[in-house]
Length: 434
Image (tube, rainbow, N blue to C red; front, side):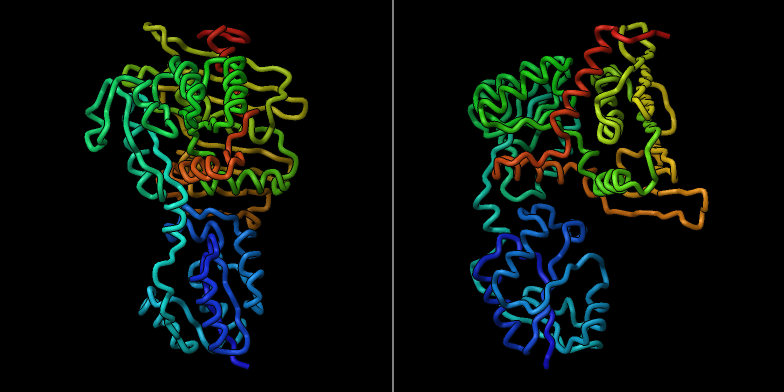
């Protein structure tokens, strides 16, 4: 029996996919179909895949054409699979012509003409025409403009700003927020934190979806009101916390919760920079606090028994350095954030079997280690990180808008938990000054 193997993403399975699988099947009696995993697709630049791996596998299975379905997870797997399954023919679409000639050493390579006029990318782009507006004066917005180019159908339509020098390539620039809201379907808010609540509220009242740099509000009462309004208006409200969308961060959370380091007793996170507060008027607690608190709230939750906030306020009344200690029933956590004070920006999660170590800057990590008493058992994990996680965050935002399902990696409880701590900071609840 002649064995044939082919690979693809098979996102939004369409007639072109099915026709290609039919022709691959006709080359032999047994067809193996490799469906690419989400992480592997990211390394190939496909970050706007609409369906999960299981949805795509089930779609291929439903065609009845595959005798065996496997998952493609790493570079070089094709050679391993050809050897493992004793494959006679490797086939793929003609748009890859020449790319896989090296496989002729292991089996016959056949390039099949694709069905003209049908493309998953075009389908995704046609289905998604989200006009995104930006509110704020921060240079961070330039990163979002750049990363939005990698997301099919997401268009930066306009900007509301008092500092247009950052946005020279945007066709519509205004300082009238209501005018911008009339031109867009969704907004990305990167203004100063004291403006977030009012700007989010106005956008939601006009039924616009919102992606906002955290914190979304300066206390938990306001954040809860915003989420209630979003639900009432059937709109999406998401924190723009890019660290949450890093593959490495997602994986370390999964491993921690699976018990790889045993029962967790401590989480310690540090985020600092020498960036001046005068540059963007964000206090340390607002600038770095949401990121530093993310692993604490993700792993230990928001049901802590006590917390203590220790801060240094500079001569202008800004938070230059803050340390927050959390006490849980069976664990502790410590968070340090600063602007104008520098420290090692690492993350350490300690357990009864070992610990997870993420080197500085941990919030941009593509690498972490699990370390044990027996160092021979230590393991390192590497994951590609493109665009600091921003493009993956934008994909999740657009997919959430389209599907109506909350695909945010920062859930409402975490967002409210961050706002509660920040509210306590400004009200000086559980606080000391140095």
